Amino acid sequence: MTDRIFWLASNSPRRKEMLSWSGWRLEIVPSGADESIKENESPGEYVRRLALLKVSGEIEEAREGEFVISADTTVVLDGRILGKPEDEGQAYGMLTELRARQHEVITCVAVRAVGNQSVKSDVCVSAVQMRAYSEEEMLAYIASGDPMDKAGAYAIQNNWFNPAPGFGGCMASVMGLPLCHMERVLRGFAHYTQTDWPTICQKNLKYDCPVTERIMAGMDIG
Image (tube, rainbow, N blue to C red; front, side):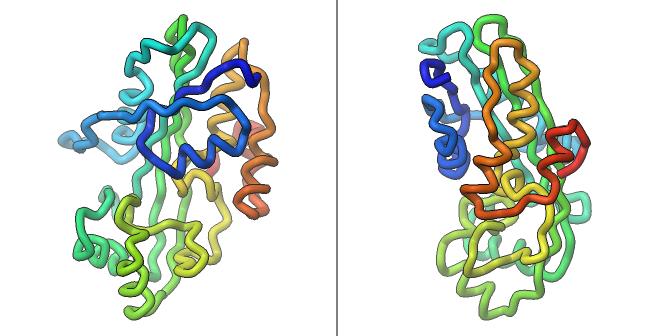
């Protein structure tokens, strides 16, 4: 496995960090995909289109038998897509709307096998219930800068802000890369050697995931 390169078509430092947990040989090819939402495009259609667009980019250095991986994540509240805030004012507005409410996080992961150009994808939908954080907590969190590069203006893994303490779904998906779903996709390629992503993910996130076994069994759950 270590002699095969995996190419990550993403600008996300979190996705890079998460894939690094495996020990795979990893190369980053930042995506320049236009992330504008098309008219009448549903959130699910949006993340799938972007993930497939990112993974389709040509990589001259890639060799046959290697894999290109991409993902796209969006936060959805009342059917509306909440992207990354452009400034602190937008972050404040998003976090105010999300406070003490449930929303969905939708992530699509796509994989392309270099050589035969076969592409496979999977979508993870997670329900996230936000806690009733105070105004002071929210303002301090915004001032930290953490919300500024994240869809919905929050990181579920932020231990200090702890936005969704009762969450019981795929933590990795809300962070931007559903690792069990990715492994499920990769196992659809005959030349892929299985990796124990369920164990790797839980160990690194320090999270006893209640949905791992069902995801790996093929259930549509997040």
